[in-house]
Length: 204
Image 1 (cartoon, rainbow, N blue to C red):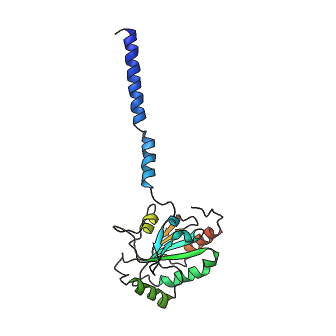
Image 2 (spheres, rainbow, N blue to C red):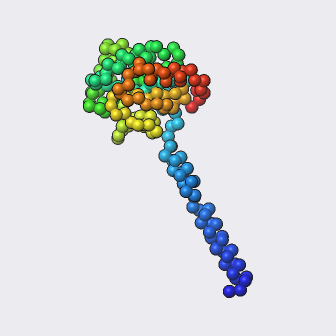
Image 3 (cartoon, helix red, strand yellow):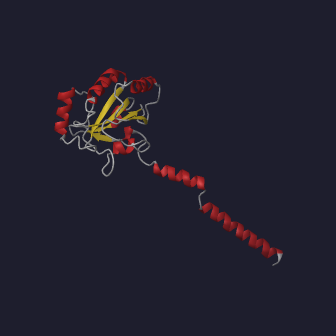
């Protein structure tokens, strides 16, 4: 093979290899793409809507700028007494930009079998609940509500009733508390105090 043909062959091979490299993303690029695709969906709780216990849809952007404690509740659970602690916590901090959001669920032990009307009456008459209570939802598995799909995307799913998610002013999950952690616990209140004092942007 003369030098001209050799040079031409080398050039063709180089062009082919360059085309292959351009066509195939690097491992790092592939990981970035995969990570990006896996995170498709809302970046903030405030982008979602949920139906209140009275059947009216509410945009969760109504809670932008507030620190939230989102809880899956049930009327016939061993932790049902925590409604009282949740109400006290709500009353203590509501004027500082805090709210409890309750999402009744029948996922664990069938302990929330009642209708929306039954749940609303129970919350009002038994615990004098004043914080927002939403319609019954699925927190896991097929039919999982968009709210819980968001909450559990980067955090563990509820293990039982009264599992708690602390959400910051921008609508992003900060911490998760198992059912056994009481609403008025030092652990939760210290986190609340810290977040309520935080000078964070309220934009999603």
